[in-house]
Image (cartoon, rainbow, N blue to C red; front, top):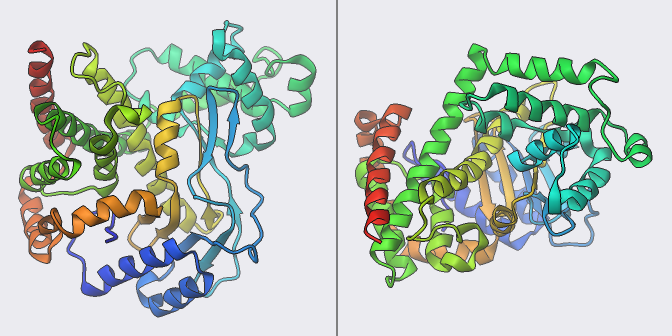
Length: 420
């Protein structure tokens, strides 16, 4: 069973068939089947762009940065589960692709510290190795996750310093770094300061405020989903993963009338693996910083959705590259482990509806699909979806509403911590 990431409308039967068919085709990795489906659903897909992993050596590997490790603490991962890819769209010969690299807050902060000459401790060698290998791709690097995650940080000088270091990284040539072992310095050229000043100016403008509010919405959804998942696990530690998932879906269905699938899949990984999945090791009942751990995890998950939604819109712009293939650079081993589990077999940028549709690998998809097709199927019936669609109009998912729900859940979490 393949389900869209968005549950804010009732699927038509044809839309459900489209998602199911492409989901199955993504698992087979057969180019002919994918092309046939694209033709079959051409009216529904419109200006959409598709990227699918193909399991055939007849397809050459695209020249992407590729997955790579930088020592033991730095990691670059493509969001696609392979580099033999088919790029597909209707009635266009423009199949240009790009490799945007979205950098986590750790890397941007490390750039700031390194540029300022501070000691990076045990991370130093791995960071330098990452810089050395990534400088040829520096023009593709983006600090969007950092800017959004620090939008409410009152220490704007610290934020600017980190972004200044990131600007120095992007402006450093491989030859300069190899020769000097450092970034270009802000006192050597005016451009890094100009870039940093412009970035800080952007964060105070109305357009960024709108973007930050939208990002906060995604963050709050991830935060309250993870918090409720943690509460369910603490309350029923011996229950099966299926029972815990049912309880989570019941809460989201009843309280918020929305089921955001990516967050739900992540919660299922927690229910199924708990501490065996590095990303979730911080979710311990006796942790005094449990809410801060959940906040950090929620930002990681929300960046995933934010980036895909941004790229969906960006791929549609006339001056843009129509097939952005996202990569993530991280110095967080736990999140990278989760990212590896969630790499896509298929990705459709649905530009007409401004949303992505993505299809996971079999080893992630099958255990959840079995539950969604049986025990938890009631939440995905047409009746349940229609009910949520109707109730959502009165419940809403404004940030104010989500903050209210999150506050209640955090209160419950505090009760768990004090009872330990």
